[in-house]
Length: 68
Image (cartoon, rainbow, N blue to C red; front, top):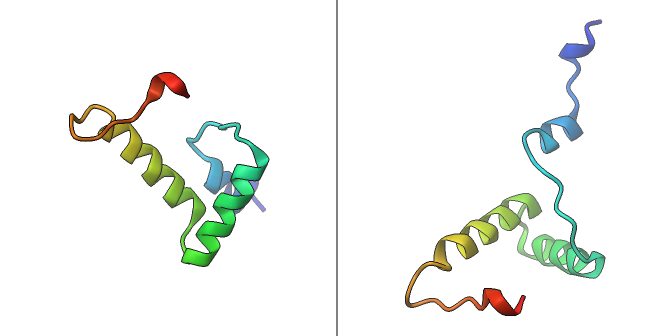
């Protein structure tokens, strides 16, 4: 058996990604939200991050980055 051929779901999930440290209560609430909406937490988190980054430069959307 070649170990390079081993199908590791954790490696596939984390491949090419960096860790992000968040409040554990926020993560629990977020996962509960995703389960009730029947959505993948990784997809929702990436979507919200992209949405926030791309709308921060728009004139009609106000994101108060200074008070974070």
